[in-house]
Structure formats: C-alpha cells, structure tokens
Amino acid sequence: QVHVVESGGALVQPGGSLRLSCAASGSIFSINTMGWYRQAPGKERELVAHITSIGTTDYADSMNGRFTISRDNAKNMMYLQMNSLKPEDTAVYYCYTLIKPYYSAPYTDYWGQGTQVTVSS
Image (cartoon, rainbow, N blue to C red; front, side, top):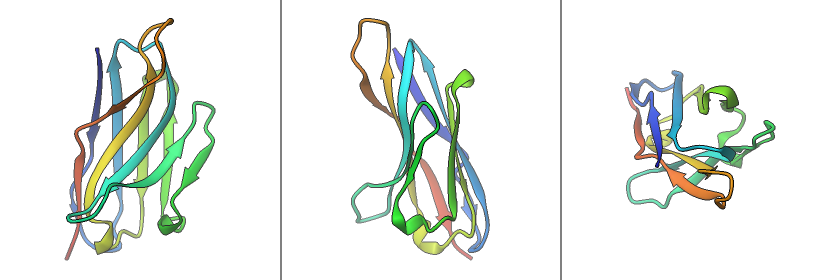
C-alpha cells in the first residue's frame, strides 16, 4: 500500500513565501514523475509543476518563476518553494506521484489529500 501526504500549507500574507512538502511511503519500488497541482474554489485542478526522476522540471506558465519544485529521491520526498505569493495562489495544493509499488507492477498514479494554501492580508 502506498501513502502520499502533503504538508506545509498555511495562511500567508501577499508577497510571502511558503514551502510545501510531499512524502511518499509504503510499498514503493520506484517513483517516476512527481508533481504539484492546485485547485482553487470553483475552478478545475491545474498543473503547478512536474519533476522527473532525474530532476527535469516543467512549470505552468502562470508560475512566472516564483515557484521551484525539487525532490529528494533517497527520501521519496518532493518540495515546492513558493515565493512572492499572490492572493490568486490561494488553493488546495495536491501532490501527484507516478509509482511502481513492486518490480512487476505497472506505474500507477497516487495522489495526496491536499494541503490548503491561503494568501491573504
């Protein structure tokens, strides 16, 4: 069984910074792509950033260089450093992982439960 848990969400003022973490645990043979998505009230879930197992990154254009995704393969962890936060960044942030639970299994999507980020003065 695989568990994916986000942490680090909080209330922060505009212009502030926040670091989100994602921890994958349980039966894990290999992790391929990991990523962050977000969903604001009344809107569809959207991509924030992806990172491959070798560290190649891809960002949504709207992040404009304010966000940085990273991962620690040894710890099965992923991070999202968010700077210059804006009220429109308010959303639930979800961790996405593509995990092979054991050698002969296919890669499967696993999602966390989400962590709330609120940007407000």
